[in-house]
Image (tube, rainbow, N blue to C red; front, side, top):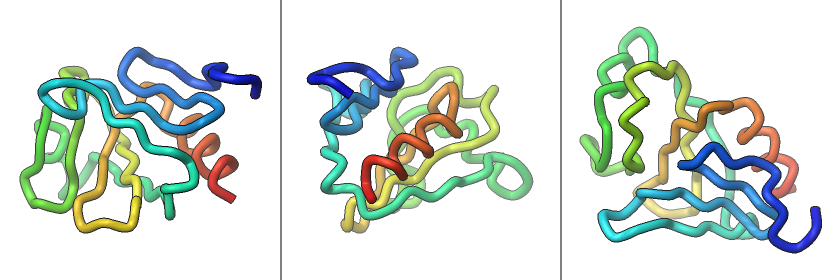
Length: 109
């Protein structure tokens, strides 16, 4: 990828050549995570017992996962949990979770 070229951008989640940008993460704006800071990515199904997590529109309900603002989350079935080596893990619901997981995995090797 060339400088600041977006490999993925759905309006809420951006993956470019430097890292992951999570828009509407904080009440005041975005969170930027460099690929070098990402320790791993876990897929979290939003079905079965986890179905209740679909309704977490923003914030945290368990002090482990921090969800960016995504009013479309109730219609989604998969979240990605980003391990950055801290207790609280950014948790996102991109429109194409497989594409974002692939990009994050490739860029963090």
